Length: 174
Image 1 (cartoon, rainbow, N blue to C red):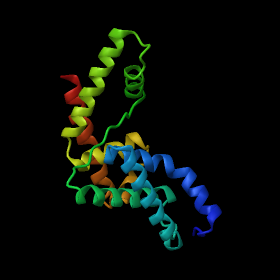
Image 2: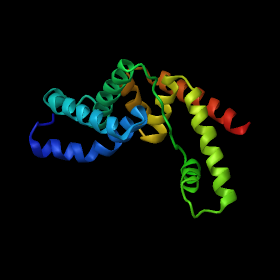
Image 3: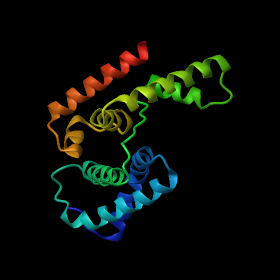
């Protein structure tokens, strides 16, 4: 059980503020909205700490609060959820090359095109596939943690991730 003392909350906030902000930024697509929603998420975390029983990892619990809040937030505004995930080391390297103005121009152009294709492919995926890709590849949560965050069976997580990766691979190869 977590105690709701300020020291414990500060430690929790420091540990999760960046990942929660990244999730909020990806979903709101706006720095100001991301900051506002992150603050609201941590207010909910603070209020819920006394009720956290330790049935799951604290990270799973925090992401579940963030996911539920952001999903409702987007729904209220009539927006669909968007995710951009870097995933593998190769994809991360491609993103770094694309954003490095000093990189070889041909390599940078190819990297930018690759990132754009990936982003387009991700936008075409159903929301339930995008979120699984982001939680697994972007935030490196385990299948069990994703299952708890999304409140779906592990088998569902595995099949959604497999289908999403297959769809992404098909788009990237063509």
